[in-house]
Amino acid sequence: MRDEQDKLLDRLLLTARAIKPDTAACEENFETRLMARIEERRNSRALWTFWTWRLVPLFSLIVIIVGIGNIVIDPDRSNDLNALSTSGYEDNLTTTLLGGG
Image 1 (tube, helix red, strand yellow):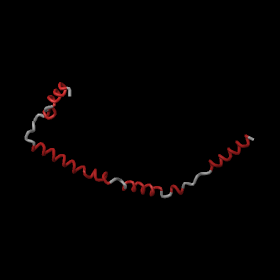
Image 2 (image 1 turned 180 degrees about the vertical axis):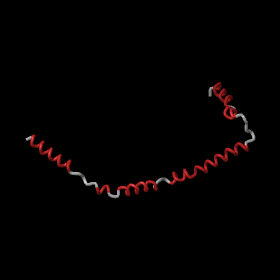
Image 3 (image 1 turned 90 degrees about the vertical axis):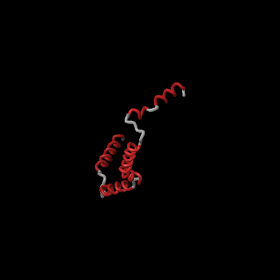
Image 4 (image 1 turned 45 degrees about the horizontal axis):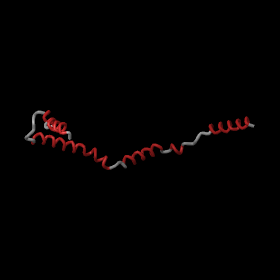
């Protein structure tokens, strides 16, 4: 009885493997649907991401103008670049370490 059931099951599985599924309906207009979905996602981007990259040159120009203005207008500017980073730092550090605060 068990052997007969195994043979029946083998024939059933062999028949099931022989039947190829019809995928024509899924494949029809696949490229069109895919491109429509990509275009939909491209159009649904947030508005700020679109304008962020458009405004980068403007903000860069503002930074350059402010930098040049800072160099030209600042009368107390020192020619020593190291003085900019260390002015007053040692005194503040010593006071903090010795004062315990």
